[in-house]
Length: 198
Image (tube, rainbow, N blue to C red; front, side):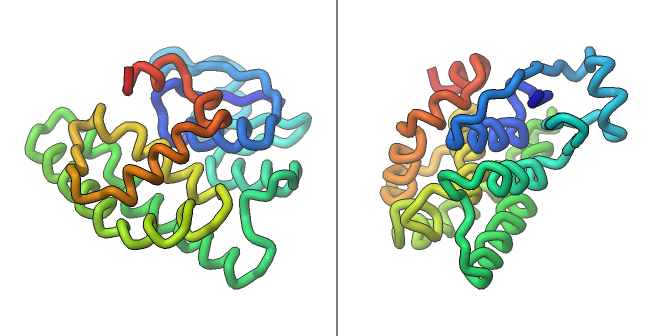
């Protein structure tokens, strides 16, 4: 198995978290925007990361990769077995991708006003979820899931994006401490990501 991944990319990071949670060993190839490997150009029509190659199979959407890994390596399971709960988790994934991940390009944008607006929207959206963070040890669950693997990269980067949740979010702080202390999460971090909170 080979993973093409970017050191500072949230989409790549959540994929690396799943790999680490399941103790799957892959050959990891770091990709720079200006210097894409020829293999990646040949394998993925979108030239995007993450891209996972498993023998003859090439996957290049992080959600597809995560669900594939969870099904191919079922232990520990990162999605519930029950179809109703599974659908609820998939809906949570969709909302986080749309509402939080959808703001990332704007946050990183050089236009100051647009970046500040996106930061405020993300901060407010995270804080609005405080009750969900408080209800269970993990997001919607007693166990770590693909939803947590998707949330964690965003929360890890809040400080680097100049987003401060303040003291009004003790449940979110507890959640962050719980997730960030997991050995698999620590293992998933690239050197660049480690430096975000050095």
